[in-house]
Amino acid sequence: MAKSILWLIGAGLTGLAVGVCGVLLAASGRYHAVAQAAGEIVTEVEAIETKTMPLAMAAKDLRFHAVQVQQWLTDISATRAAPGFADGFDEAEQHAREFRRLLGGFVDAAGDPERRQRIVELGGAFEAYYASGKQMAQAYIDGGPAAGNERMAGFDVLAEQMTTATDAFVLDQEKAHAASLAAVQRDALVTQQHVQVGQWYLYFAMAMPCAAAVVLFELARRAVVRPLQQLLTQMARIAVGDLTVRCEPQRVRELVLLAEGIDDIVEGLAQMVDGLVKAAAQLESQAQTSTLASEALAEQSQSQAASLQEISATMQEVRGQASVAGEHAQRAGVASRGTREGAERGQRELERLAEVITTIQRGSDQIDEVMGVIDEIALQTNMLALNAAVEASRAGEAGRGFAVVADEVRALAQRSAASASDSARMIAASKASAQDGGAVAARVTQVFREVLAGSAGVDAMVAEIVLTSTRQQEAIHHVGEALHSIDGAVQDNARRAEELAQVVHASQGLVELLRVAVGRFRFAASQPAIGEATLAQYTPSSRTVG
Image (cartoon, rainbow, N blue to C red; front, top):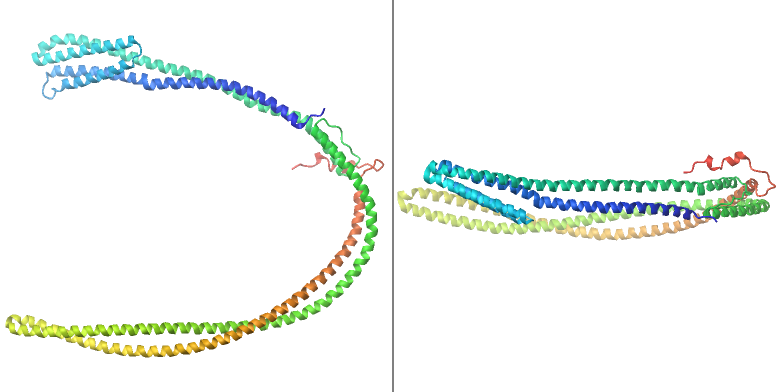
């Protein structure tokens, strides 16, 4: 029973999928182990960050504050609270409070009762040590060196015990922190081992597709490629005309269908070639009859085309003359429009000139009013100057300087009046000239209106001439186009008749070529075999597939 290509590929891919799934399941188990170990590492690191490391640092701070208490009490004892050292009790008390605060934190963090008891005992030892130190310092202050030395021996013993206890306590906290770090390292090593094993699983999973690809390639080469090469060789024989070829039986379902299709095609080609051989003989006799008819049609079409060309040339001359007349009429219309547009521009400029002259007249009236005001101001200034001169004369010697100023003001007022009078005369003359210019501009504007009216009439007549000429050109153009169409149709008929004659002549050659082409096919066992040299040109090994 023939197997399908899809079945072969599906079987290979199914085996590959099963193997990959098995490897991935094993890798998944390793992944969960790695995830669990990583979770434990994260938990231990968080414990180190939040508990062991802060406790180790706090233990060192605890020892520092105990030493500072001893240092300050010793300084007080040595200086006997001299000026500048009287605050030693306060400093010692501050360090003692910090020691108690840190020790309270250790009590809260202690998990088992035994550890908590040791911390409480350390607190009691500190309190005794601190109390003895204060008593010693106070003895030095109150009773001098003799009284202080009596207390010092007991304080030194307690201080030595306190130092030993705090050092042991710090060492315990450091050991706990080191143990936490060692546990993290152990978990990290375990995680690394799981990761290495998982990598090997992944390498194996990646190698499996390569091995499966090799197996599928070999299976496809044996079941598909070799049979396809055999079919290509047989199709090469078909390509050179050997229609007696029949495909060999195949084992793959798709190749079985392909071989059956090739056999059906070869059978159909053999029947078609047989029909072509019979049709070629009929085409040859029909081609000879068509040759005579096409030659006669070509001669008649050429005669008609020559007559139409003469008529078309005459209409082309008439069309050219009408085109020249139309161009002259259009030029006249353009010139007429240009004249009318120039007259319109001149009229607009004259109207603007009249507006400007009117504006000048209004400005002259306003200047007249201003000059009247200036005359009035000069008159008032002159009167004030006269009054000032009279008052200065009455004042006698004291008003002499004021009289001089009044004379100068009167003289300035007189000159202003004279200048205003002269300006008024010149403005009156300018106003009269502006009025004359306005009248002239009005008359010229009327003349331009008359010119515009005449230009509009001429423009209308020229436009009518241009329109008439354009219609004549269009009519001549339509006639020319009709003749050109008729001429084109006749030319096409003549050309087609010639082409038909050529086609008929060519068909005779094609019939001969058809006989030669069909003759190279071998569709019966009685015909001669195809040469090996011809067959080699179509074999798959001699061509490059792109």
